[in-house]
Image 1 (tube, rainbow, N blue to C red):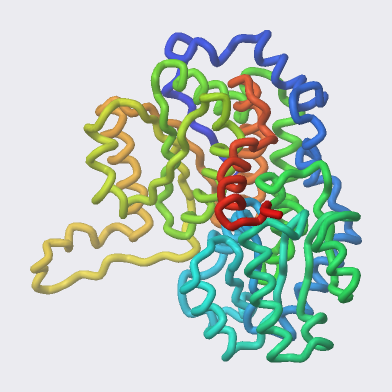
Image 2 (cartoon, rainbow, N blue to C red; image 1 turned 135 degrees about the vertical axis):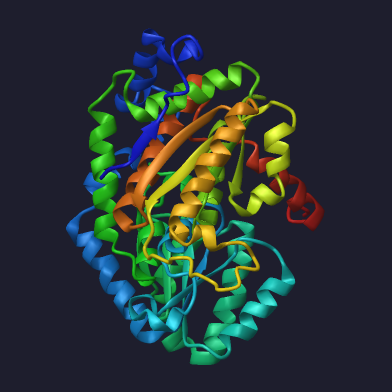
Amino acid sequence: MELEFDFSEFGRSEAPLCFDNDKRQEVFDYLCNATGKGSDFLGWRDLPCSVSEEEIDKIKKAAALVRKKADVLVVIGIGGSYLGAKAVISALKPYFDFAKHPHHKCEVVYAGCNLSQDYVADLIEYLKHKEYCLCVISKSGTTTEPAIAFRLLRAELEKKYGKLEAKDRIIAITDRQKGALRQESQENGYQTFEIRDDVGGRFSVLTPVGLLPAAVAGVNIEEMLSGARQMRDRLINDQSENNPAYRYAAIRNSLYSQGKKIEAIVAYEPCLEYFIAWWQQLFGESEGKQSKGLFPVGLNNTTDLHSLGQYVQQGERILFETVLKVAESRSQISIPTDANDLDGLNYLTKYSLESINHIAQTATSKAHKEGGVPQIGITIPRLDACSIGGLIYFFEFACALSAYLLGVNPFDQPGVEDYKRNMFDLLGKNKK
C-alpha cells in the first residue's frame, strides 16, 4: 500500500485555480527543467536516486562506530540541520523503554537549536554520566546557535576524553571545500560528510544531514531512500493535473486566494510532532516572503481537540486542515471488560484503541467540514522508514510547486538575516 491522497472535497468549481493548464505546465517546467527562481538549489530533487551505495555504506559504517562508542549522539544544528533528522527519528523510534529496543540503543539528542543557558547546562550535566559523540552540522560553521553549542560541547568532550580521543568522537557535516567548520575539521582530523552546494538546509533530510543521525538511531536508511525514490518516480513522471503533489499545491493556493490564510497540518500520532515541525519550517521558510504565504501550524489530535479544537470548530474561518493519517499501528490493544463498568466504557470492548482513534479522526473531520473548515487527507500505510521517506519527498516536491504557484523563490530565506543583523549589532560583533 502506498501513500493515498483525498482531494475529493475540491472540484473544479470549488477550487478554480487548481487546473489552470498553462500555469501547471509552467511550474512543472520551473521544477523539472530547472528554469525557475532558485534553480541552483534543486539538488534535493534527484537525491533518492543519486545517493551512491558508497555514500550509504560510509554513513552506515560511521553510524555503527558511533553506536559502538557511545550511549548518546549529540546532533548540533539548527533549522534544517536538525529538524529533518529529529522528524524521522521521532516518528520511527518507540515511545518508551528505549533500552528494550537494542537497534535503537544509541540515544540521539540535540543542541545548537536554541540559546537557552539552562538547556545547555542540563545537557552538559546529563552527558557527564554518558559515553557520547558529537555530530556538528553546518555549511559555514559560523551560524551562532550551533557554533556556540559546538564550542561548549567540544570543550567538555576534550575535558572528558582528552583531545586525541575527542577528535575521533566528532563527526562534521559541512561544506565540501569552504567555511570555518571545514577548516577546523581538516586541522583537527574530524571525520566529515558533505553538504551539497545545491541542497538547502530544509531540503537536506535525504543527505547525510538527516541520514547519519537516523542511521545511528537504528532507522533503515536504505528503506527510507527507497520510499523517497518511489515517490520521486510517481511525481516526476506525471505532470498532469492528477499529480498528487500538484493537486495539493494548487488546492492550497486556491484556498489561500479565497481568504484561507492558515494551513493546519493535523496528526493523530504524538510521534509525528517533530515531523510537523519540519513541515512547518519547509513551507514557512519557502513561501513566507514578499508579504505572501499561508501560515503553517501543527495540531496533534486528539490532544489538541481539548485546546485548539474549539477555535478550529467555531473560530474565524481563515484556516483549512491537511489531515495526516496512519492506516496501521505498530501494535494492537483491545479495551478490556470491567464487571462494574463505572466508567461506562464496556460498550467499547468490541474496538481496538486504534479503531477508536480512527473513529475520532472521522468524527472530527465530519464536524470540522460541517463547521466550514476545508480538508485535505493524506494517508500513509504505517509508520516505517519507507513511508516516511515517501512522505518527506512528497512534501518537498509539493512545496517547491506551491511556492512557484505563489510566485516566490522556494529556496531562499532573505528575512532570516534581519534578526541576525540586529543581534550582531547588539552583541557588538561589528564594532571596530
